Image (cartoon, rainbow over all chains, first blue to last red; front, side, top):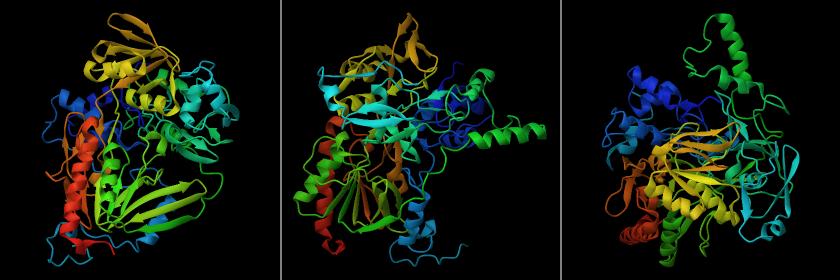
Length: 116
Length: 418
């Protein structure tokens, strides 16, 4: 078997591949993820993100005080499309709130549904 | 494929044989199992460590984390793909099959990929040109891509169940259980959920919805969604609580050493959890690899030897672990357990809008002095290892945050659910 050192086993991303990505100028967790596919397999970054941060810190590409993981989105656990569909039925039609609506102070009128 | 050498043995001689009264089928071959077994522990009991192949380099793969996080133990169970073998309790007569096999029996010809492409495959440029090669590549990729094939039968209907508790506790580990007990003792209506069955946790008198993982927190819709029930009777739980307490604990992550993907390489804490659950001990020479402060205590508890991560040159083996090459020579091993500091589990807190901070072992949920980490349709709280607190004081931390939730509920009784 060829000797390989893995950061992300879901997508078969090795330390050498991350170093290649660093070599072409990528340096943040998000950039490495987009380029290598790291963190996009069945585990969704649960196994690899911390190992990647340690590697980027070792290589001097990021600082510990500023580093952030990539965005966490549902589903965090395996769920079937049928189950997701029944959730959509329960919670009504997809009237997704604009992100600003959540952040707006109490009492202030939320923005209308239309995207500006 | 079924190896003769069990990786596990009973702590009490003769105990295991008597307890193994169930039978599961792995690719149609019968395997004995006990009530405490998961699919993975039953397979390790008959020496099976490799349950699949990796997507790109087509290397043999098997379970690693042993606690439902990593995603390489996925198998088809009773005609439904992508079950996590490591956390799925066995049932008598269960049919377990490997996924994504190129041929039903015999060697997998795609295993050659790993040897032919000894340097890295760069998928940005790999077989993109000329067009004919690209088309052939696409045909192969389509057959190999994805995880498993469609279920044998259409999915059963999903039963919805709505809940409006005062407090929803996510996670029934040390901190979550402690907080749940304190809040209920004070008369609050509390729902406590856990991803897995009760055998992974310390015994508790508290009512917990086991095997009911929260998969989504949707602040914009004001809903938290979890899925529970059995394979043919699924229940979709939706929660609209006034307070949410994130108690998701910590997990093992990957430790980069050469050939860290070989079947038989496990996460050390996960392996300890499996041995505790099944009341078994390791039946093969095992080496714990990590930083001394973390790995040495785990090696002692596993009954294994220890090698510092800096001394490891490579893990050696063909289709499974056989040895470790160290700076002072080769050491035989049937198992390698990788030990890193437990990383806080923060995905659900982040979905709910909480911020995280890097704390060397991982990203911990950032909270104020009371334990709050967000305000939306509910007040968001967090406790225990998810916040970077160590396991030994996690229960105390859960109690402290529970007291602060109590104070918040009592100061705003109008925010009760009913």
